[in-house]
Amino acid sequence: MTYSEKIDAVAEYAEKLSCTVLRGETLSSHTSVRVGGACDLMILSTDPMTSARLKSRCKELSLYSMVIGNGSNCLFSDDGFRGVIIAPAARSGSVSVKGNIITADAGVQLSAVCKTALDNGLTGLEFAYGIPGTVGGAVYMNAGAYGGEISRVVRSVTAADSSGKLIAFTPEELSLGYRTSRFEHTDEVIISAEFALEPGDPAAISSKMEELISRRHARQPLEYPSFGSAFKRPEGTYAGLVIEESGLKRTSVGGAQISPKHANFIINKGGATASDILSLIRLTQKTVAEKTGFFLEPEVRLIPPEPEDKKGDK
Image 1 (cartoon, one colour):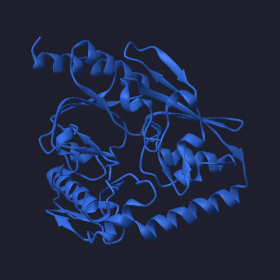
Image 2 (cartoon, one colour):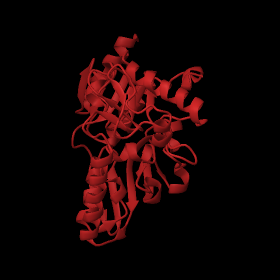
Image 3 (cartoon, helix red, strand yellow):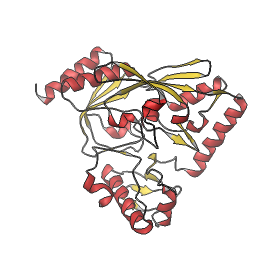
């Protein structure tokens, strides 16, 4: 089969699974930073198991594929994506509660899980309220904020391997570290996650959530497209602090800028390209390393990945 025939075969399979099929879709419409070229085929999947089936079909045809959530941590090239992007359709997935356990499908918005916890008087997920991503994405990168992390509340994660077999992982088996998990290094597709919370006072839970949202609005440039934090926290300090100490606040490359409000945010001020943002990432890494000795590792996923000899402009 030719490449085009393989794409057609996956598209036909996706339509049989009642998915939405988009050809030549611009990835800037599916990422929080609003940049990225066109992908050969995008499929909006109805549920996580369908996403797993689609990824398996792509593997059978030797087609490169990727499952994404909100695209809140992805920097796609301006040249686009040669292969298949599988993303959750709007309002895909379900959330259920049993006692102090919340189970949520991978495509569910993390904020919706936080609201479910509030509605059921369960505490432990307040830190995640306002994190712009899906459950799957949050598990994939062990999302965290304000002293909390997914690793502290996740009870188990169900994923499908490349053959479609479901596997339930314990927290110990997830290899959850600082903004990382086992899923960065496998072809497994996250299906759902269970969160173990504690009974709490709904008024106190609501108050904490509102406090954290207010802090986000006060300290983060939420009025502009961005990834959230651009760099991981270096050991012993903070990315935003060393960027600011290096005199990089407000530095721009094209339409991309290091936010004047929070130095660990790279914002799209309008018309930014992926190339602009990548150049700003490299400039930041190089300058911070020279002036402070710290090497900043991107929290952002560069797609396709940056060659090793280009990282930090070494």
